[in-house]
Structures are given as structure tokens and as C-alpha cells.
Image (cartoon, rainbow, N blue to C red; front, side, top):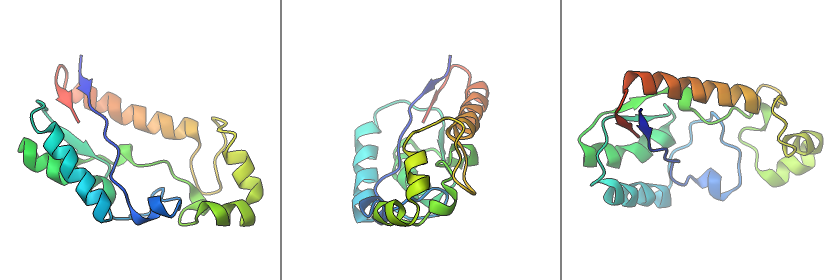
Length: 146
């Protein structure tokens, strides 16, 4: 059985601003880069066979210190990207609540098949990520993947 270590990307300015990032390629801020370095220090002794990250810059930047610590290449995996939020990407929560109140109300219900216009539903997002994880599990049978 393949063992997985799932890691969320470090902080971005948009996280601090409560701004929906989705598939917009937002880099880590100084705090996020420090978080990534501290994570690598903490996890350096852990044995890992392969390192994958979403192909978005914030995920790749989070993985860089881990790659150095583990002496591995970070393999970009688009299937691990954040959920697509469509027309809400780039907007902050206060703006969304005012300008898209109807979409906000539907989105916070977390219904599996609801997709924001131009975005993807939780069901589609889950299927995409689980498909990527299944491919990685098969490619690294019995290994440990971050």
C-alpha cells in the first residue's frame, strides 16, 4: 500500500486578504516562504520516495525546501490543483457577499454538484484529485509519497 503525506501550500497575500485564489497563480508571501522552510526542517528526517505538487506556483514554492531536504525533484501534478472557483476567483469574501450574494449563499451550502459559473463542483474537484492520487499510488506502490 502507498502511504501519502498531504501538505497544504504556505500562506499567500491572498490568503490573508480572504481572496479566492482557485487556479490563479499567486505566489507565497514572506510568511508562506518561512512556513515552507520550517516544514522542510521538520520533515527532513522523514523518508519519502517521491514529491509531487500542484503545478501552481504557491504549491511548487512550498515544495522547494522539501525537495532540497529530501534530495528529490518536485514533480508538478495538475490533478492536485486547488478547486476552480470560476467567476469568484480573485475576489475577496466581503466583495463576494455583496456583489454575488446569491452565489455565496449557494456555495456555503457545500452541495456536491453545485459549481460556480466557470468553476468546478465539489464532486468534480474530488474526482479529479482522487484520480490523481490513484495514479500516484499505482506509480509508487508500497512507497511513501508527499
